[in-house]
Each structure stands twice: as structure tokens, then as C-alpha cells.
Image 1 (tube, each protein chain N blue to C red):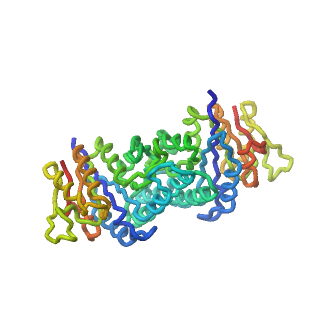
Image 2 (image 1 turned 45 degrees about the vertical axis):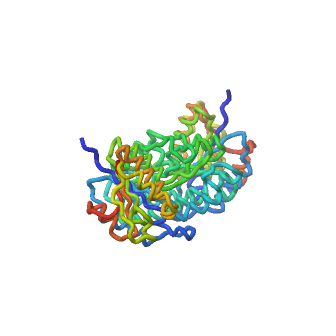
Image 3 (image 1 turned 135 degrees about the vertical axis):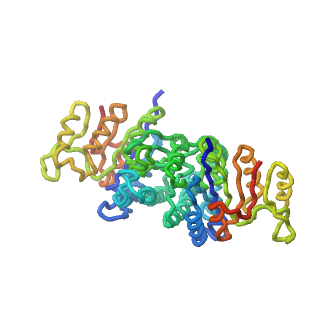
Length: 270
Length: 270
């Protein structure tokens, strides 16, 4: 029996917030994405949406050094404030998605998992499976992790969707769409070098070369760590979870993808 | 080895919100309770705080008939709106508790459980145990339930703390404090009959008589269903989880209790 396809959309923090201004959502982008998902979504596949925190939890996470765990007497309070800030952005997205007519329901990552230095080591996914069965879109987000080694840690959206995609392979055929602000991977920095070539597919034949391209200054964190993303996605591809980098600053890209129309982007497979 | 005591405080919806006015928190009461917990809490026991939804989720829950499940095309959207409304109140409490200097962290009940017509049938408590071990106070609240029979249901704070208290008996010695707006149980309606006698303890010797007292008009839902509460608490007492009804409209009551000072209230034991 063929498993149903499951698209896991990751809306990057740089896409949905102004990363340079604290607590500033890009409401116009969020609203457009909500409409694109509503219009493009056809019911022959399931959907999960995860979103980054951008300029919401990152401010408090930096202040309290949440990624380092319980390091001083403010750390526990800080952990809760980071969760609060992440929640604030989640509620903005939730509201926009509901207003667009999407049936979404938030599942809070730090409530359903335990981490070990930021890597999930235990997760409870029954409610997510139940929502998917009822054609409700589970909404997850980058959060604090309750960490069994260091008390707390940062639970990145990538880590959450990585673990969800692996766990859900039993029931679905997951495909991850990294919705960001760049077209995908080039063989050199396309801003500096107009002759840079676009790479349509990363696979076992060119992965080493691609990581080398991304290893220079071009790979430094301007796009939210493209090199790290590609490494994670390539590892997932080995488990049968393919993915795509998609520029969702370009209106219509996400809608086209969801409708099954071919769009420019870098595919990662094995 | 003696297990540590675990106090599970349930802050009633009538206590922390104005039930007659939509989306109206009683900020002064919430702030006072936060201070009383901060001042009264001594670290020879663990603490969990659960709170009702009062006039926050009840409005949308009534509008979408969430307790009945997926009954029409608005039910799924309604489920998410009820969760959103419950979250709004939770975030108000979270902020006040953090401001009072309490290390609290919200665990979202609908993310960690599955229900069957409003009764929890599966729950993931590892993050709660981890928080308790780190002396962080888990904060839970009345929420929507993801329901395996009817799609969604109401997950009452009573149901959550009932299940938590039973599950956590393995590690702790739980005691539930129902923080509400009445002193406890009387043998007749104390408002109508000034000669009514206060009942200091409900146990196996007087439980039938008490339920009979509460069966008349006095028991009708003015206090959030005292008869139902006593029945649930008495059932828990059979499992070794004792409890107390405490009037937390009276300033100082909660602080005194947490400090170990005797306060007026109805104890429920077996």
C-alpha cells in the first residue's frame, strides 16, 4: 500500500519576521503565505507547518544564553521567557492561518519532547498523528527544549521537523519544504558573482562539492546557515526523506509548489 | 523511602477571571496569588499549578460547542480558537508568576494527551517530571482535548490534575488544593441559612451525607459544580491522593497553607 504524502513546510524566521528588528513580524508575508497555502493546498496529501522564531525568541534566548542551559540564577526564568516569546509569534501565525480559513492547531514542541544538548531524545507524537488523520494541520515552532543534560536548550525548528519526519515515515511519505528567502544553492555567491550556476539538485554525486561551495564565505550564516541545512537535509535523504529549498519571498512560489506545479528550488535527495 | 510531597494547586476559573465578563482576568487576584505562592512556598515540597479558563475559553467553547466534538464545518476552526483563548489567559498568568519571581514553565495539556469524550486516555509526562526535578513549577491549564472519539472535547483542569496526580504518585506524594471562591462544604447553603454547619473533612464516614447535602439546589453549579468536585476528589482519595477546598478570595489563605499553617477549608480524604 502506498503511504500518503506528507509535506512538512518550514517557514524560516528570516521569512516571517524582520530579523533586524526585535519582535517584528512580517505580517504581509505571513498573510500572503497563509493565502498561498489555503489556495494551493489540495487534499491528496497531508500537511504540517513549522516556523522559526526569528526576532521573537532570539532576543531573550541571547539575553539568557538559553542554548547553554542552566548557567546562573536567571536561567530558569529565562527559559520560560524564551518560550513565552516563541509563543507570541506562534499565536500571530495561528491567527493569520485561521483567518485564511486553514484548519491549523498548535502543538507545543517543548511540551512533547525531551532534549539532550538540543537534540530530541524522546518525543510524543500521538496528538500530531490524530490531527493529521482528522485533516487538521499541526503547527509547530522553534522553542525551548527541556533538556535532560543541561536543563534547557534551544529546540530549533529544523530539529523538530527532522525528528517528526523520521517518526512519521511509518505512516506517511514525508517531504520537507524549507521556505526561506533564497532560491536555493549556487556554486558560488550569486550576489558577488552574477555568473554563479544554480544547483537544481543535491544528491550523493555532488554533495561533497556542494558542501565545499558552501564552506567559504558564501556559506557563512547570512541565509540562516545554508551549509548546516544542506547537511541535515542530506542526512534525512539517506532515510528516504527528500526535501527542497524554496524561495517564498517570491509571491506564488509556495502556492505553485503545493498545487504540484514545478518551481525553481534546490531539491535534496540521496 | 518517603516520597517528596507534591502540592497541585488548582486555581479556579471563577477565582482568576470575572466569569460574567468575557475575556476579563482578575489581575489583582492573580497578582496577589502569585505573591502568596512566592512568599509561602518552602522548598521541602514540589509544586504544580493548574488553572481554569473562566471567561476566556468558555465563550468560544460555547459558541463552537467544543464539548460535543466535530459537529459541523466550523468545529475544527473552533477547536483551535478555544485553544488560542485558553492560551491567552495562560500567558497572563505566566507573566504574573514570572514577575513575582516564581520559576514556572507552561506545559500545554492538549499537546501531551489524547482524550476519549473528555477523559484522558494517553498522556506524556516526562517533561513535567524533568521540570519538577529541576525545581521548576509546571503550569497547566484547562484546554481543548484532542479526542480520539469525537475529534475534540473540553479538557477540564480537574481532569488534567486528576490524571497527573495519579501518574505522579509513583514519584511523589500528591496533595491537591482546589483554590476557589468558597470556604468549602456546608451541610446546607450558608448564604440562605446562617446556621449551616461547616464540614471540615469529607471521608468514607460522611461522603454519602455530604453528597446528599450538595444534591439539592445548594449543589447546583454556582460554585463550579461543588458536588462534581467532591465526587472526583473522593475517588482520588481512594487512590491515596488527598485534597482540600480552600477559599483563595481571602487574602493570606494560600500563603498560610503553603507555609504549613492551619487554614479553614474542607479536606477530602478516604
